[in-house]
Length: 259
Ligand SMILES: [Fe+2]
Ligand SMILES: [Fe+2]
Image (cartoon, rainbow, N blue to C red):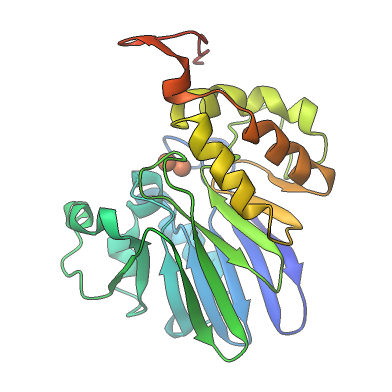
């Protein structure tokens, strides 16, 4: 495991804390991100129970745990929330998650919901500290019914949760997507089966196209930079997926390949 600074100025950093490696955790490998401004930090999608100790080890290279000012959850899945009850023993920071998932989170062994903030469907702006603001943007049905993205206007990075997520074969490891066409085989099956519909994808692409984006940072796999950002958005805008492909109950016109 290593961390990668996706944006790095004297005052502000956007760090991929845990570029996970094959075999590090059972189940799908996930990315955890830390955004810092001065001594304050925000943790994005802290990850499952198994990665929590290594994510914490990387995080304390940058900030003290008492300076975690917020935790953002893109959605309710176990690869995001599974380690949260342990994080809540270390921090009293607010935890942001879509309004529609609040009532389900106690089932992760979370004793008190007092720290949680429900994010409205339209999203919200979070003022973290002096000069430090993050935008929570809606990405509903991509794939979760209550999905949020996080936009950092200083780093010009959009954290996209599962949008853009890839599972690379173990013999093909890379941290950045530069050649979108070569990367496509590692994202297509997931997006066609898990993303709910083209309408949701198209409306999201239209909304985020108004942002100034240098990097798309997904919760799984390499991050998109340079031309690959526009190439991904153009592909996703026209993607037929989910209910678009259903022909009868349990059957799709596009045959997913599962390894
Ligand atoms: Fe997910
Ligand atoms: Fe995920």
